[in-house]
Length: 508
Image 1 (cartoon, rainbow, N blue to C red):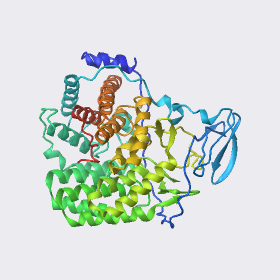
Image 2: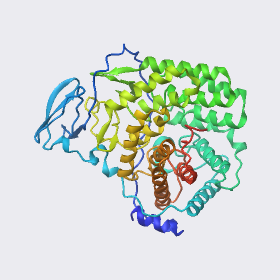
Image 3: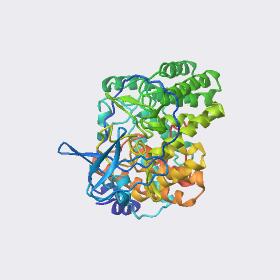
């Protein structure tokens, strides 16, 4: 049954009995190691961009859509049988059998990852009711010793028999979401987690020991859990433990948000805003200095400045929010009030030129690939379009730069998110419909154009229908902030009044 029919049934209150197909499983996450590479001198900004597509592997042979970066002002022409492409700085000819200049929007994303938007209209009363039922189910399934059961689609993130406590897919994130909904008057369901909070770090450490996850990770490790605990305890002991994690992670070689200092730097921002203590500003600034030093001009494209991510045994230059460029720049934008204006301006300047260089466009639509150089990185996939990779996450992390030049690119990215439709992978924040919907809320906040709020609300209705589908399929809810239904609930609630604050990033 498709999401449109499911949404209609859900709106009538009968969606619990509906059967539907399975979605794709999550991609496993593992810890990473690597070596920090210091930046070189800045080169002349004399290259512009046009990147068209990337390599695909079939029977051991590479094929390509296209990839070409050109000096500014030079026209790119190609015939139907072959094209010129830049590979590691060398001009090569790749046989394609089609004209790259006649690209379609489908080339900016993978249509198989998306589905048709349901036509059920936004109804605030029905949305509040759905959120209330989700919250009631979540509270009812809580156990003080075992917390919440892990969903089968999150089983690749740890031992499903162990209680999970992270803010990403565990109890700290669920508790945060429930409290956020309560504080905003969305739900009146009673709950009290005070006796359980003190056990979260022990639970998280046991769980991460089995999955080999690092304690310093903001989303998966102890860092985010400690931020949550400090919010409730204001304990000096908790703050000191958190500071030690942030400081020890400054030289993390991954140079990305999930494991590295950009994530722990965000924790420093939240603690500075909560306490006003100078040590948090100081450690945040040290992290920003490390990020600046770690940037490198891209090979052959010195207008683009990037970081090298050394993770999972591979070195790549990711562009998105989950592991790459946008995720690294986000703490600078979020913590701009803690930095000299010149520092922020320098990062924003490099952000604009890097996104221009790597932007893939088709008329009024844009996206960014998973990595800066997909051919050199041997990634035979079409660009993703979700929060962790692609335009949605880039919009959510970078729209706060308040740059008209950047706005133009982000608006094109938002148009593609709308044209592509909801994700088939699920309803959540990290790689689901709710995460993509937050991009619309960001653009609404930035532009004031009501069409973005309308689009966000349409995605919220669809995400709630997807949640109903998954409940019917698996027989249990996905009790998780970033991968599951608590993120959907927070997003749907945000759509009521157009609140663009992204959970645990913009606010904590």
